[in-house]
Length: 287
Image (cartoon, rainbow, N blue to C red; front, side, top):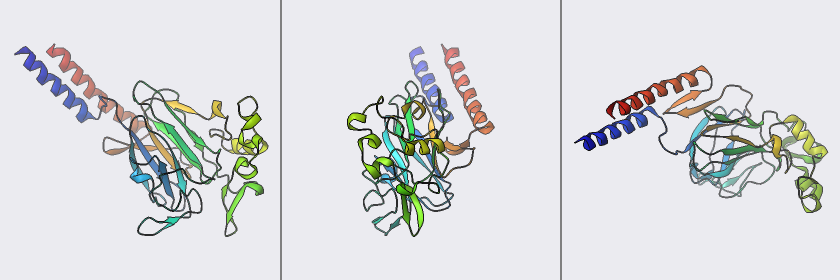
């Protein structure tokens, strides 16, 4: 009889935890993509099976909430100047991945990239994330972890490099600079591409071009061996990925509602904590 009652209390405990939104097992991460640009963009994600097939339209001011499974490793970038027909066929001025709205492969350079390697075990291992301009720049891009533990610094580039892009690196359309290529992409030398004799951290050093990128975007990769100041870690976090962001406030989606950093986020955390304490007290009392 006692064993039967114990099972009932365990079931009750689990139900309370789940209904409160507390993670009782390793879970997926929430990715909130926000378009703060003045124009429509077409985010792309690879691998994209869990992200709308790898590509979708996001109008100015819109956001979308997606779920990344534990252990996911991939990249996110924005495409610009796209035209797709009703079947999802078309092309983009920057960041295109062939002729499809849904990306199954990496995009063409130049493009600003958000890169992630998520831990398989959410609460006990570290995620690695960064924003890379190694393949060039097409949009300001910022990654902000929310509600995580550890270093959890914001990564990315708020600045728009296009207006001040060196002439030799500039990509233009209709007389306007729409992207900024990397020096490796333009000149394809061992020095700029960190290959051959320059294929290690000792010999591959910042160039005049990568220094321009780094000065404008100190929390983004500017060349291949820019690891110390450009790759970040966090544990048990959700992520906000913002294009063209200049706002300090960030939000993500928790428990079927939008939760923003600051006091409201803290209240939400406290609100869930009392439920955990109640469930724990019930369990101890029954024992």
